[in-house]
Structure formats: structure tokens, C-alpha cells
Image (tube, rainbow over all chains, first blue to last red; front, side, top):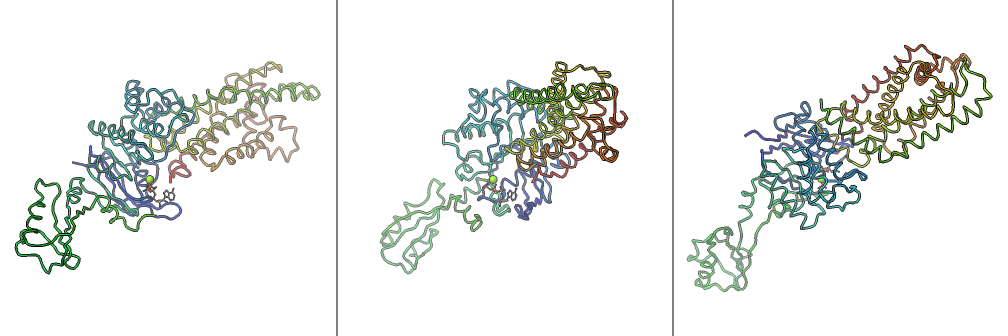
Length: 309
Length: 253
Ligand SMILES: Nc1ncnc2c1ncn2[C@@H]1O[C@H](COP(=O)(O)OP(=O)(O)OP(=O)(O)O)[C@@H](O)[C@H]1O
Ligand SMILES: [Mg+2]
């Protein structure tokens, strides 16, 4: 399947000479939800801005729906909806006017039913005649989403849509995203919330210091994360693993005072009960037991270590 | 051609104009009326006729031009500067619309507003002075072309402006002298020869002259020159805007 968005060797140096993207390549699949994680200043917004036509790449190529975003910008851009990170709205304009404007700007004829559907879905229908300056921050963010959805995009970029949004509203937004996904919309989401990525994404990309460090199926990533360790602290140091425990994947650590057992927490049978019985049978005195698990956060921190600015 | 986009921008901008209708129209109409009273009635009665036209009537075309030029530039400049300032420009830049379409939307809206103000002032002028319009079609054509071309200039200034001071200062610093030295209040032939020559480098002279000709058949420069000057100016502005959008100057990072 050809990717709906294809980013090839995109490099971006800002006027001040700062290199925000160091040759990024990324293929986004039609219909997927891709979460882009990365610390502040990693280049997420820069990448999105280049794809959407707000910034120009210093070099490299971007295609959306097979159309080059520079040479064939009309075809490329009409597929894209963008919810920017910053809340930018005309303060004196009504909600309805700004959203209608967005649809027109993208060349779509007026469609009142569609407007109503979007505004209702985002719980903005009551506010349709309110000036945007009269709205709360969370409502403003929803207006931005409504604007992006006004022209029925195939690809939706959400640049930190849930930043500064309360729990309930965040759930609503997740519902909206799921609904869009079920209608075949491709979603690219940047976020600082790892749970959000876990919950929403099909694939997770990690970007740091202007480079994509990893793009992986969420399932694969989670499988890796599913690996757990059971650490058994012994009252007395053991010199080696007793013969009788040879069938387990065990290692001795901390100079023999701890036995570490690796297992997959998502399996029905983790083997923990049998192991503990066998340990006792082998005459080992246990003083404490604990489990350890690497989280997405650990992977994230590992990959982006020292990159935070 | 994304005609719907042009229409969307135009309507959006016109709604903004109507929201502030009173202040947008009242101020220019009032200040021009004051000019009519002071220059037309008070001072004008002591000045001889200019080439057979009473001074009060003679200055009407120039005064309309003065207002229309300033209005066109400031309206269009503000129209595009505001989205830049508050950040909504992201939407224009990411829209499937060409520079011509975006420019057309903003410039047509600004030009409509200044054309309306120009016509209101013209109507007001009838209250103060005896007016005749010999070539009404040409009069409208000149007015329209002026509104369009100077809205284009304003659009460029709006893109260029980095802050509100620049946005306000440039129309003031550049336009006022051009207009006052552009023959709005006198016939160029009244000036010493050296200044007459200098005057011909001022584009506004051609506008005022052409516009006044459509009223009284009096012109400082041949009417064809006036038309050429204004068309050339329009083309130059469009060319510059095209360049700006292609390079992304002051628009795209
Ligand atoms: N207009 C600009 N001019 C110069 N440098 C810029 C500009 N915009 C961004 N940068 C720099 O480029 C880098 C990447 O910025 P970007 O906004 O893409 O980061 P981000 O990943 O979106 O961060 P955040 O999570 O904080 O939103 C940063 O170091 C930033 O300072
Ligand atoms: Mg960002």
C-alpha cells in the first residue's frame, strides 16, 4: 500500500541557522493513527508545519496522497486538516463564522448540515454564535479542531490537541479521534502524554533533536514492554543457581543476594507460583520479592536521554 | 481556480468591516467634510477660479483621492497584518489556494470598502459645492482602479510590517507627502518649473489628474498617461506579491 504521507530526507535549518530537522524520513499509512512523541524542541511542530505548507523545507520532499506538497500543493493540501499547537483564533469572530470560513478557504461549497454535525460532536453547537474570545481555553481548542474538520480532510494533524485540556474533555477528544479513524481518516498526533499514545495510536514514532529515533507498531512496542522481571531477594547469598531450578530463565545478581526471573506478564501462566514453590523447596530463604517493568516512558527516556532542552 | 476560497476570504473580511462600520465610515467622511468646509467654503471663496472651476469644486476630486488612497492602503495592510499578528495566517498558508486567490480575497474586500467610502464622500461633496461630472464612467473607472491598486500596495505593506508602528507609520510617511504634493489642492501648472518636473515622478499626480479630468475635463497630464501609470502600478504590485508568496518572505519560516 502506498503511504498517504511520505516524508523523504526532510532537512530544515531556520533562518537563525538552527537545524531543527536533520534529514527526517517517515511513511504514514493510510488510515492509521500515528503518535509522535518527543521532548520540547524535538522538531515535531516543525515537521508538521513543513508537511502542511506553513514552513518550507531546506531540502527533501514531502508527498501527501501521492501529490508533492510544493509542486502540486493544491491537491496535497486539500487532503490535510491541521490543528495547530498554539491557539490562534480571530477574537471577534463567531464560532460559526470562523468554521465556515475554514471550509470555504479549502474550496468546499457551503454545507450547513456538516457544520452542525461537527459543532455538535465537539459540543460547540450552543456556542456557535459566541465570539471566540468569549470561550474557555478548552473550547477554543475544540474550535480549532472544528476548523480543521470543516473541509472533511483525509489526513488530520493534531499538534498536542490535549495539552491543557481537562480529563473529561480529553476523553471526548479521544472519542472524536476514534470516530474519525473509523471513517478512514489518517491521524498524526503529537503528544507529551504517553498514555495517550498508548491508548490512541497504531504506531508510535519517537523524535528527538530533529531525528526520528524509532517508529514501531504499538503492539510490538508493548510486547517489549510486557516483559517483566521478578526479583527475589535472598536472606543469604547463594553461590549459584541450584540444579533443581535449571528449567527457569534465572540470573543471579547483586553478588548472589538476588535472583532475577524474566517472564511475560501478558501470558496466562507466568510461572511465578511454581517458581516460588521450587525456590522454597531448594531451601532458599527469601527476604523480599518485587517486580520491575520497563514502560514506554523508560524507552522514551532512554532514547531521548540528554536531548531535552 | 479556487473561487470559493476568494469568496470565503472576501465575505469574512466584509463581515469584519460591517462589524466596525460606523468607525470605518464616519471618521473619513467627517474629516473630508471638514476639508470641504475649510478649503472649499472658507478659504476657497477668496481664491480665484482654477482654470475656470471654482476652487471649492476643484479640490473635490483630489480630496476624494486623498481619502480613498489612505483608506485602501490602511484597510488592506491591516487585513493581512492582523492574521499574521494573531497567528491565524497558518490557515491561509496551509490552504489549497494560490497567492492570487488569497490576494484577490483580501484586496477586493479592502477595495470595496474604500470604494464605498469614496462614493459616500462624493455624495457628501454635493452638499458643499457645485459639482459636475463630465465623464462619470471614467470617474468610476479611475476610482475603482485606484482602490484596487492601492489596496495591493497596502497588502504588501501589511505583509512587510513587523509591528503596529510600521503598519501605521508607512501609510502616513509615504502617502501623505505623495498625496499633498500630488496636486490634490492645486494645479501642477501653478508650480515653478523645477517643481513641475519633480512632480511628474509622483505617481499620485497621474491619479489625481486623471480623476479630476473625469470631473471637469482638466488634466495636468494626458489622460492616457494617467491610465498607463495606474495600470503599470497595479501590475508592479501584483508582481511583487507573487514574488513574496513564492519566496515566503515574511510569511513562511
Ligand atoms: N521560527 C523559528 N525560528 C527559529 N527556530 C525555530 C523556529 N521554530 C522552531 N524553532 C526551533 O526549532 C526547534 C524545534 O521546534 P519545534 O517547535 O518543531 O519543536 P516541538 O517538537 O514541536 O516542541 P514542543 O513539544 O515544545 O512543541 C526548537 O529548538 C525551536 O527553538
Ligand atoms: Mg510543538
